[in-house]
Amino acid sequence: MLPILLKTLPFFALIGLGWWAGRARFFTGEATAALTRFVFYFALSAMLFRFAAGLSLAELFNLRFVLAYLTGSLTVYLLTTAVAFTRRLPMAEAAVEAQCAVVGNVGFLGVPMLVVLLGAAAAGPVLMVLAIDLIVFSSLITLIITASRHGRMGLDVIRALALGLLRNPMIVSMAAGLIWSSSALTLPGPVDEFLAILGAAATPGALFAIGASLATKSAERVSIAAWLSFAKLVLHPGAVAVAALWAFEVDPFAAGVMISAAALPVAGNVYILAQHYGVAPHRASASILISTVASIVTVSAVIAWVTS
Image 1 (tube, helix red, strand yellow):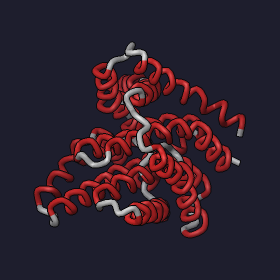
Image 2: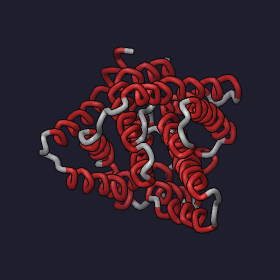
Image 3: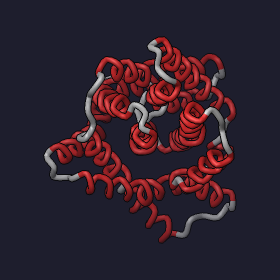
């Protein structure tokens, strides 16, 4: 595990540097928001497009892979929801807690880190996990909160979900890359170099932005946040491992990438959704903070296991 920990430390050191810059007010909230927009709309999109343009749909989409990840994730999702109901929480709050337990920071942390640590072949499985999180689970929490508040699902909600997916630069860049790949054309040299240079900014920019955003997070309701962090860092990769390796017998390398992606800490967009709907934002904030700190050890342990 120590060699893997030493390889992951530079990634977490960048997060720590961003956290220090945010806490010291050297990097203000406005600067963090601007850096996040740059990474989200430009650098990360360039990286995802370039990865997808080098893949075929068959390399990206594998039914066993999708079913294994969904089975493991939904198992933890339902377990977390049941625990929330035993505490007599309303459906909307239970949905936020379940989201914390299964949606990891795949876009900003997983894509740059896992491709470096596990090799270029990890790009396809990581992109598949990212797509499932964005399409399935981001839509699911919106549907649950809306239904719990209004008691019904209208066409306006479905339309808003569809438009949200179409406007998401990560979804758009992956889809555009796959379309380009299907054309059997190679990227012109200057275009490929431009995307490589711009995409190279995604790793340091995303990690620094994660850290700077954590500087504003609080650790209120630590006991609940600790439970949700445990569910995300331990139960989620464990359930995904059982589904991938035994239930669906996914290719070992792809299964290892999937399990590593499942071990990532809670994603920042869970807090954004919780804040947007006014449902348990402090709980989501604390879960992101605690799970990110704890993941320095847990993610290294999981990656060491899958690579052994």
